[in-house]
Length: 217
View 1: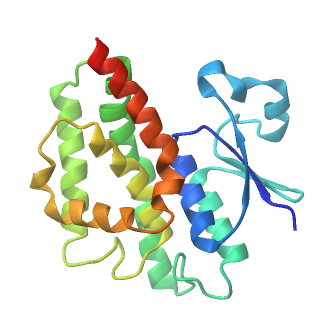
View 2: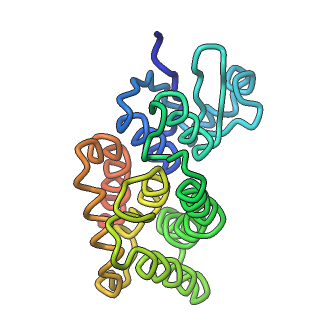
């Protein structure tokens, strides 16, 4: 079986969630980096693969799929065995995972990317409204994960992978993260997974690059 090809932008949060899923499942990936800064994703060649020209995108044999949460579901369904706890078959447990994936897509990740990462990258001052969105997002995760090991209970799921890569924006957030002890304990717990560091190394390298630029200003 040929490795699944993954077109990705190193450091991208959605791409990292897919890499974490693959590593958790033991599914090998053939990484195909695209430099979004150089607009590699807008090339005619990539447009033939994915007309939306977005990452992550996978090619598994003759099947092509994009959108990170769809890819994570697909990987578990195909390579996770009959009933994998990362995305359980039980309808209620699966619904709990799906709800968090939808919340992350529509609310949490949007707040992190628009109100933390982009202002930091572009050296733009965060507005009061933006900061309030970030605080609300962190508070929501902190309240949600109280008395639980992971986001849906005591079992790791792809919801944790989806949210944690966005939560890593806390590395850039100037606010007091000690206000969110439950969320930070969960974050540390996920970071202790044996494949976390390798799957997210590109992000921390990117972060270091921008921090260096910040200190030199």
